[in-house]
Image (cartoon, rainbow, N blue to C red):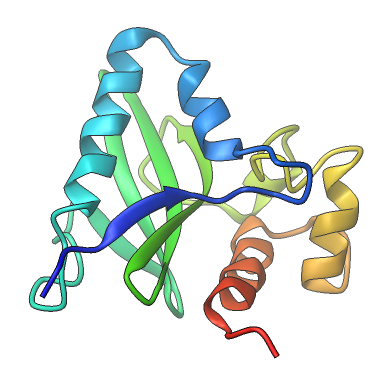
Amino acid sequence: MSNFQAVYYRDADGREPVREFVDGLDEEAQAAIENQIDRLNLLSDEVPHLPFPHSSQVEGELRELRCHYGRDHYRVLYRRSERLLVLLHVFARRSAKIRERDSNRPGALGGLQGTDGRRATEAATGRGARCAVKGVSKIANMIAEPAR
């Protein structure tokens, strides 16, 4: 059986928020995150998840890829859709735990929050941008559902 493939989520405007975030980092931080993303491409049906501490379940099918560079912790939220691992959202943390209030920071939803992104988050969650995990989970569920 073939390996899974990590792909960047692309919003309705053609932006790829995770790629844009990573591209905005210095070269060494970029390399650290890209190396972890490359590990996702090694996964298959036989080995469907990276072990902790490289990856962990956040909520339902939503998982986080845990990337470290120096004292910074980066989290890439992703979801499996058949053979694809869709990279939905990324943010930097100084601690290892995801907080719901991270969604209130500008850019916290990687393009799903803010002036234009607030509408996307409200559409996905049915309310304002209060919880990044819930908003991204809803989008992740829409990605995984077949078109009708």
